[in-house]
Length: 91
Image (cartoon, rainbow, N blue to C red; front, side):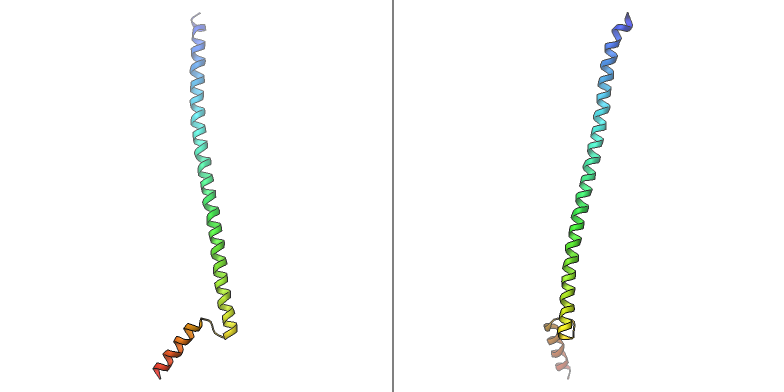
């Protein structure tokens, strides 16, 4: 008879214990998901920034190569005029 009175108490303890474990598991799972999402977002932002940087550098390098083909030299006209002034002053 004494055992029959303990069964509901044991069931209640088991349910609360199980809920506690389940809650801890869900908290850990939520933290892992949050961390994974954050890392993915950071990686995507990094990839986009890298692509834009590459495009910009390619554009700049193409411009310099294009000016070299036109003038036969690499660099701007300002740099060329500074070089000519410097050589004129040295003479």
